[in-house]
Amino acid sequence: MALMDFIKKQFIDVLQWTEDDEGTLAWRFPMAGMEIQNGAQLVVRASQRAVFVNEGQVADVFGPGTYKLTTQTLPVLTYLKNWDKLFESPFKSDVYFFSTRQQIDQKWGTPQPITIRDADFGAVRLRAFGNYAYRVADPQLFHTEIAGTRERYTVAELDGQLRGLVLQHISNAIAASGVPFLDLAANQQRFAQALTQELTPAFAAIGLQLEGITVQNLSLPEELQKVLDQKIGMGMVGKDLGAFLQYQTAQAIPQLAAGAAQGGGVAGDAMGLGAGLALGQVLAQNLQAGLQAGTGQAAPAAAPAGIPPDEVMALLEKLADLQAKGILTPEEFSTKKTELLKKLV
Image (cartoon, rainbow, N blue to C red; front, side):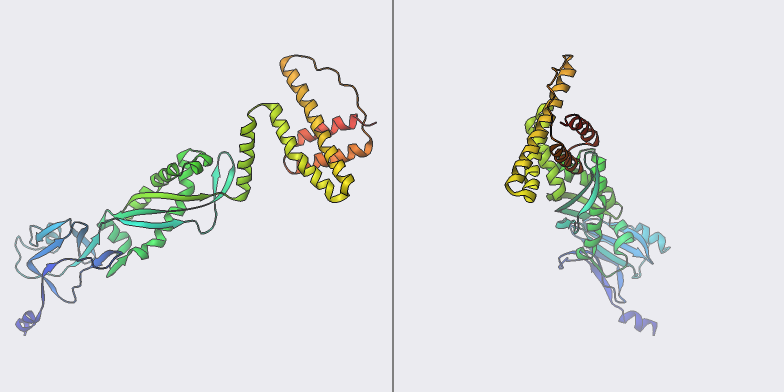
């Protein structure tokens, strides 16, 4: 009876994987009760690795090539099974093939804006997307950490995990690079390099090698774009203090005029424009005094100019609005309020 059972058994003479399914990372050779014949051939192609697993324990790992399976070519498995120096009978062992070619054009992106910390702007919310490529570099580690004993493990099944890794490390990549966010945004290649350095150990921890990552788009939130526009405008006037104050005044006058026009028609237009011009005069006087103080020259005594109480109140309201919008600091508002109160008729 035992002899008949032995005769009915099927023996495997060649173990190979043609890799006919795209997107497969790991594939278990179908045993289905069959045993591997002593002296069978193992064929591992150039973009593959083969792993023998005995009772859940990884034994021998084979790179590309053709092998005759004997105790000499299966040293770890021979030790685990306590074989003698030679064995003549077939044996059972799980054999897994792994694809080591690059998995290219894998997409990553931020479904929702993510918040990062930046030395210049504090908290910044951004959107970004791109692609990356990777390969299985350590099949033994990938088997124990990810693929396990499944019959097949695909690229699609790993996609969500890798996307999460990319998103998790974006903030760390920017912080570790030491490069201000604006510089990274202007140079997406530097952003990609910083992200690659941060992600490489995370990929290696699960047996993968990150071959490259690209940042195809980096979009800024509207509020940050406004700050950038203001910074560009300031860059155009340079570092001169007088130009800076003139720039702020020029930015404030249209807002003052528009606000007054909404409440008073032609008279409101005149009042808003007059308030803006008066504010410009106050800023110019402060600027002149500051510049002369810095050079050691005495500022010429300005002739006292009286302003009616209603105009002073209107100016104070406009100054308070500028402070609320962040154009004037509390200290600047307090100084200008004191000056205006002194000019009451």
